[in-house]
Image (cartoon, rainbow, N blue to C red; front, side):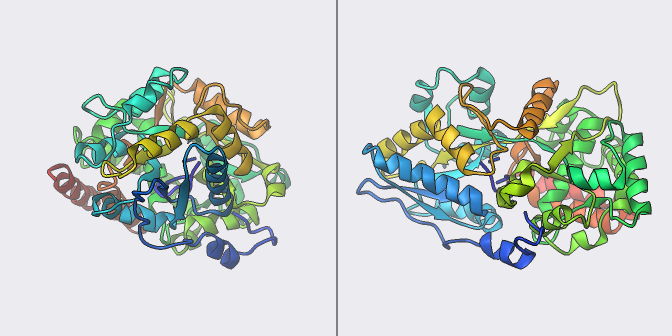
Length: 431
């Protein structure tokens, strides 16, 4: 269900875009703008207020339809306040710590939720989980804070990969790579045809670069090291981390040079228009793509670098957590139970782009080859990670934004960049 703002976030914050002539970049960015600004406050009269980062058109429509369906059931009332994703991410701590905060928030499971819970900001929803007996233990664990309380209710997850248009790959006479060597060869071929091989949108969405760091780190050093690094148990100036950037430097010449100036939405517009070859992004990007473009989309997994490293994939889980200061805990929990249902998750998938995956094990995903391929990739993975800030904290994400964008600009300064990153990270970990 996402509008990935990191980290995503993220479809990302779960689980938007079109340059096909149907809508241009300007209209797209306008469509993704916030429908409201500032927090909508809790309602003691009984209406549950939802602060949502799902601002791309289809995702915004999908969550609004869910709320409308809930209100028709007569079990309570709710309203949605939609905020542009980047604004939402930066303002979330303010929302949660305000005197009269919104009741419910779209955001992420895992470490990022645990971080807010550790500060006493999230509502204990363990009693909601008592009714979610069909959910797997792995999902429950992801929704549990360090004290053992459930603080999050998931609704969808999604995958990341290198997305491309099948018609363009056919036109260019290229195929999906499986290994890093094949990937470099593909990039060289596309560059030779005058096509910037790799799209990237760093404009006001610098967190997109974190996907490159995450994937290179889990491909080179493995998921366990990656998690320890993001938890402060390893150092960013470790030689193992430098090895990640050594690999990254190999593909920097193939990045779209314009991609540093515009956000991921415009990078996706360029991809769909055939102005770039492929884009490492989450499925949330398709929420603002024309429906008739979805059938031409395909993806391949991030290439294998070291066959000895167990294959991990990024699979961010999106859903909701609630303010500990809600004045309507009962109504908020009733709404969470609805969002966790098969009915709600299938309706959300249907109303959105359709290439997110419902978390409820009995809810049906969209019947498409793209979704089946994504689900199969996640099912075959030895391990799953979330995304940089989801596996760490929202507070650590800006340190990555600074370090990674600086590296892309000045790759020859990697030693100094990693020392600075470590120093910045230490300040975050020390609080």
